[in-house]
Amino acid sequence: MVPFKNLINDEYCRDTSIKIRTSLNGKKKKGEFIGAFPSYGYIKNPKDKHKLIVDRSVEDVIRNIFNWNVNEGLGKIAICHRLNDLGVLNPTGHKKVELGQNYNNYGIQDNTYTWTPSTVRNILSNEVYIGNTVQGKRKTKSYKVHKVEQVPKEEWVRVENTHEAIIDKETFEKAQELSKRDTKVSQKTKELSVWAGFLKCSDCKRAMNKKSSTNKSGNKYEYYICSTYRKKSNNLCTKHSIKMENLEKAVLKAINFHIDLLIDTEEIVNQINESTYQNLKNENIENMIISKQNEISKISNFKRTLYEDWKNEDITREEYLEYKKKYEMDIERLNQNIERLKNEKEKYESQNLNNNEWIEKFKEKEGITELSRDIMMELIDCIYVKENGDIKIKFKFEDEFKRILEYIKNNKLCINKGKVG
Image (cartoon, rainbow, N blue to C red; front, side, top):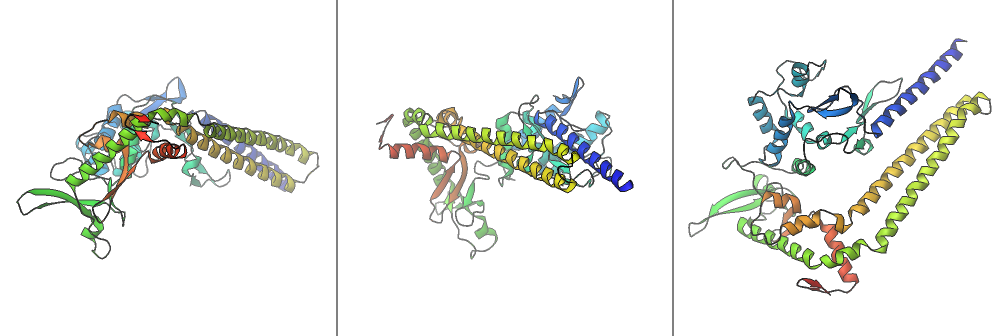
């Protein structure tokens, strides 16, 4: 009887584990917080432990971190220094000392509670500060093996607008962009350059370095050259030099050209949005999602009858476990397909030119005569400098402009100033 009891007990543990995971996953999908400790800047709502409220005592610290990074150009190390100089406790110290929570961080060996770059990086990349709840980043392997595994980012459970935001989405998105760029504050001026993180060599794709020189007339001028050429070897890449004055003129001209093009073609934007192809595409995706959901429902019904079939001895235990595993894998695969289709649908819906904020962003910059870092971050993704001094600008909304130009070409339209005919 012992092996048989062990078998029953094991199956009971397995079913219990599945039920618990299913319950927790359901809470995650509803946007309910199920963790033990909220992220720095939030505490659990005393009336509902699955809801988060802002920790008013440190919300200004969060805002300062984003402001220093986005508007002042401070890096993670510089932010750490500033916070430590101000005597601000790090998240672990705040939870233990100021909130009195039984929180342990085994990465901290002493009780100094100083800030580190990794802590600042985690804050700058955490969606909780724009009101989103993101969970399911880690999981245990099974109810038998308690090893914790990292979950791929595309499988995280993300629910938007579940609580009060501390940071606006625009600032948060700018912080994410800056994290991907090589941005350094000038040691002389202590200011972040307009071009920092945007200029790259068109051949080696490395950043361009700023230099200054004096011409024969004694006038000082600034220019950029390839960092590979300057720091490594002139055999690895060429100079790719460009004067800052020429760079500013070229970028301003390109931005104003795109603004004029958008204004001149504004009449056809609605025609593109109302195109039959766009509507059919969304309709087909929606039908595919419904089909996948019906398939999941059918497989779930099959799965529910398995246990009875096993108990009625219609199938063996091995067949029961095999079929159950197969059905679970099929459901997981279909859920992934549904998520992919939903993302694709959102992508096509976001391509609706009239509903995108990018149009307003360009129109607001009409007639600009001077570049700023805000303009660069809103409109431009990257600027590639060629060896002959020419530049290639990659705008953030190239796909949208291509759709406009393609529509004009396919419908044999011509562009006149202020009018498309």
